[in-house]
Image (cartoon, rainbow, N blue to C red; front, side, top):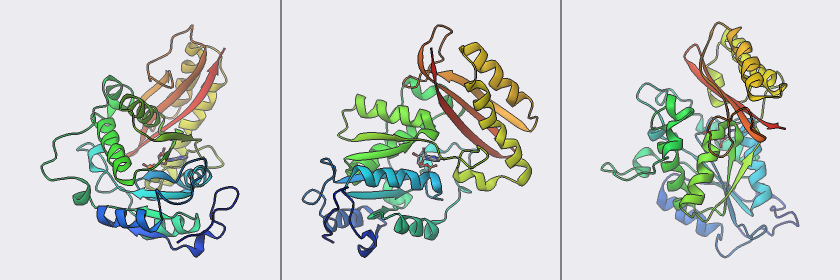
Length: 302
Ligand code: AMP
């Protein structure tokens, strides 16, 4: 277990250290002990980085793991499809579950610990208390997925409490999720440093997502309109022009059902007006067939 960290803070031979898989809270405590967290190596003072996921891991998740390895001596990945963040008519039961392949990805990326609890282990049957995402939880994604951001924050807070990471890495792909987690960390004084990671895309622009595997070949062609629309908007100067050009691309793809296309402040997710300068997030959500996809880009307005 005691592999000396390299100057960059990584174990020299990560695969000489077996990947520990904890499938409940007791296993997690043992794993933290086995890794010597609290007493062992740190990178810039960080012993443990957490990458929370719902599994079905792809290159986007891999990029988060690599970033996590630069930020802490040990990396934990959680794999948990969180029922609280799915609405009654959403895809909880058919969400892809590929645990064996996920473990292979984690092993290949030098992950130290995978935490994959059951729903029963995470939630008491008489659970009462959760996190409220506040007003910010009812706009943009929250308007179309009521309760989603509350459920997401609740599980992230639980994962922080259980895994006790110094650092947690999240993708910019879920921009409102990342903004809300930063908000929760600030509002509740959580001792975790949040790191955002850029969106990984296919060569043709489609943002990687576990849900892309639902897309038929025709759906996949239609789905490309999301990144094309963001790109078209990004070429413009004023908020009105940005929205106009992005919407025109979406409108030209009849098999897309658009939930929203917004240009928002990156921290608050409120729409920016015409006088806005600085960063803004152009975010889109649309359904292609029965699959709902989201994407965004960050722009700088002068
Ligand atoms: P998920 O498993 O979809 O809940 O995602 C787990 C984490 O991976 C979240 O922080 C996501 O934002 C991030 N993620 C998902 N897709 C991508 C992507 N294409 N590029 C970078 N990060 C991503």
